Image (tube, rainbow, N blue to C red):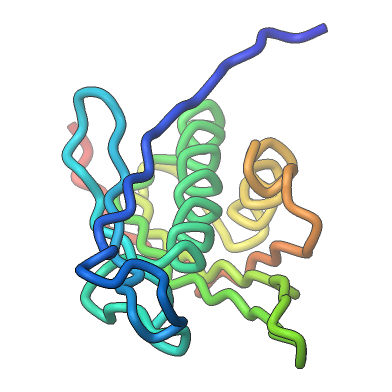
Length: 164
């Protein structure tokens, strides 16, 4: 059996107001997410579900977590392969289907990483694709979800080498 890690957080609802959940429209979906030693994340539900559009919603956090995990594995694998990454931006998109009864689920998340490398040696899109595949195979979070997480990288950008 492998090494076990545990992760915890506190989610505190702050939207009870005067009426609490006396009706579906009576309460705010606002909440805070806390973890020791970190600033709180201000959360709510998606605006489509009566949430505050200025706060993070669980769906955004799931998509962001998938992108973060993939990026961190990609950077690790790139460093190990001698690929000098100097820029990484991802604009992932998750698609969620909500059914008539209100239940729903994600159907897919697409990662769209834009990687910039320093030209210290030849690197091409095929090599980066292999690194992305490796990241997808290792990412703890994408391995834990029951929907596909696809990677559609933007073509490689190369920063001219400043050999030192």
